[in-house]
Length: 265
Ligand SMILES: C[S@@+](CC[C@H](N)C(=O)[O-])C[C@H]1O[C@@H](n2cnc3c(N)ncnc32)[C@H](O)[C@@H]1O
Image (cartoon, rainbow, N blue to C red; front, side, top):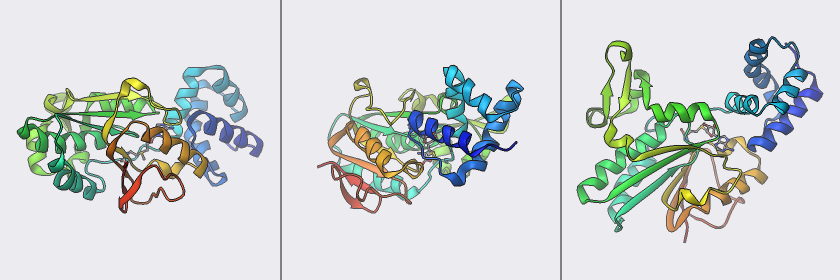
């Protein structure tokens, strides 16, 4: 079903206001194809009518946000970051508890990868750890909490981590694996919109992963998000971004130490 340009513009504004995400004009087909199933669900035959519904119904507004966000992720994505954490940052840590935030966590693959690295590197030194995962999309946060993944997600996980931290599903869970309770009990997942400052309850972090998220925002909103996230980074803490992202002209509150790794001095 086609969308008139004016209606697309209204969705563009609404999406930006609610999530900060910039939907360029080139994303018109993407938006319509993603929303089409909601129109079918309600038996609605125009995007204008759906726009009215979304404005009146906060549940449907969240549904729309869930549908338009891109949640692509994988375990051990951009593995050099996990190598750097394991080989350079963890050995220098002197405290009693290490806290990491996966700030755009999607279904939790990044957070559980972090959990594997932290558990392996810190527990033998009697250092406890915690991973907090947040996302604006409520559906992915529920999946992250379940920690049950299709076997295809296991391909990038090293055998030793599969053996130590993943349980192979049987019977009705055939074809899935579950993250072991050793990791799950130190991982928390919360719904949060990074366009707003983090709640003070979330605390301060030694490391923040904000990867493959900034690409969906214009520079004005990138600045807001990065400044919000940095508020929760400890002095001397590290911020990781995705390989195709940069903080050039976005903030000078953190200093680049590697192409996609920054420190808060
Ligand atoms: C492509 S995924 C990246 C997942 C993971 N960080 C990685 O690199 O594999 C981007 C995530 O950012 C989330 N996101 C988009 N806008 C957001 C916002 N304003 N606040 C919090 N999360 C947001 C999306 O829902 C999505 O799950």
